Image (tube, rainbow, N blue to C red; front, side, top):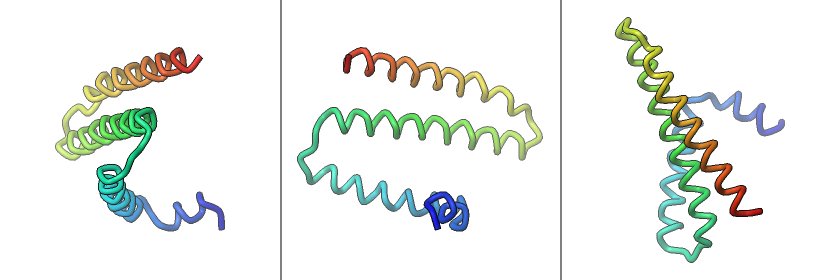
Length: 96
């Protein structure tokens, strides 16, 4: 069984719980270890991206459940995508 098959069987709620637990473990490891600043920066950017995306999805679900217009969330998600793309381009320029 490949990783995608295992993830599909596990289900999203279980995966979110597992990843949340892993992030807490990573938090402890980061606090106690010596790590390259560039790795930390990349990790922080990835976490920020996931945080913004999960916020938008949560808002979308809550607004839909309240039978309100959920499309107002899309501009915030677009801003996050542009911010992330800009950051990736800046990082690439620094690497080159």
